[in-house]
Length: 467
Ligand code: NAD
Image (cartoon, rainbow, N blue to C red; front, side):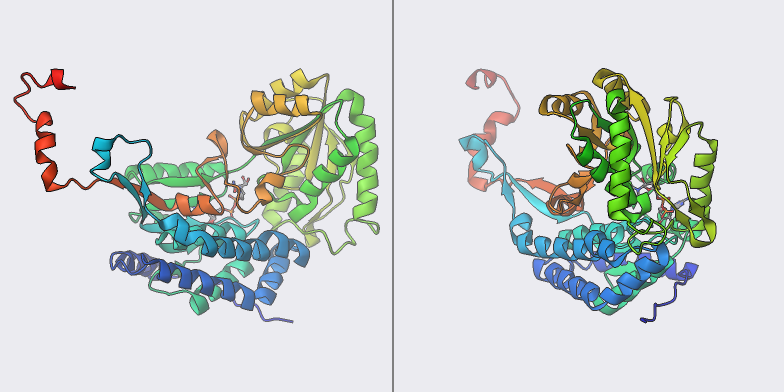
């Protein structure tokens, strides 16, 4: 058994010191050379690798997360991202010339350089405590920023391991980890940042956005998803059942980008339910509760919230529904909902609830998807080419996976982010570097050009006709 480090809130004076430390460091310019960034990224890689057992243990303690899932969506994910960024960083940091310029403008060498945004605050969420904290951190280091990271206090074991990795692996004058909840985060937000990168719910996202607006601080918001899945009458129902069920059992449905509800063509409902039963029997032959391959709800508050959602819904439970608060267990629960205003459809469950609403046709599905969740984080249409293309064309969302549940979000080099209500800005791979980079345009005007520039100076008389 590994010994997990203890989670402790950072004392308030430590919060202030963390900001001052990384602020001062950024203004020494030492985090800017690419060699510095690469060295820190490599150290981060090895810090994660050396602490793999602790990462697994922390995810198990906080979320009951199976090691396989921890590798897939936390540690393996972050380490692969570091390798990808290290391989490509030299290319990304290079200056870019302005495209399509005429000969005269070429003389002044119009260029875009990639400056770090500066001193940045990253606020993580609990459901993927490593990926959602370390992921943005990779982009910030790659871009040459200095960072205070505030992991979620709701995944305390993971937070403590992240802090250990920081202390062991990263330069403490440039990268600080602050632990805490609302008071500590509020204190952090009272400082002037060059960028705030927040992952979490939209209510807190609004608080962050308002606070940032006071100082015109740019923000990246990675917010919640009330994501629709659509199963048309031409869909492969077996695939839809397996893929959408998986998308709701991974991390016990605590996935921002998994489907929040399923709109299914009425003709396909019975077949879909049968395929879900087959899938459950295949995934969990000894029952979900007895399986080591199913996570738990992060804490009792979230468990109670999910129970309340189920209790208050007028829908009918078709599959699942078993609960055990002491174990924070909530069986994946399929509920047929017949009212499009049911809270299971309109509110984000962020848990293993699978509401299904039968529709007459694709027109109704698209209309409802747009009404219930106009700018969702993801959308998941299952159907033939024409139908899935139509869904993409007639809806809006941060991203989409056609004939799958959130596959797009697992592609490490594909920019990931929301739109409208589900967030602003994106990251992952090159997009992470871009998120923390200011594209600074500049020109260099040679002295010998002065005679050519005379045309711009007053008096203008007689000059206009020279154009
Ligand atoms: P959470 O409880 O971990 O909170 C997120 C962060 O907000 C934490 O670090 C917390 O300390 C901070 N916070 C809480 N209250 C605050 C306040 N008043 N002021 C400042 N900071 C505060 O996680 P959560 O918000 O419950 O996460 C679930 C939500 O996040 C869901 O809506 C989910 O869809 C969304 N989410 C989005 C993404 C994404 O990438 N788009 C990823 C994960 C989760």
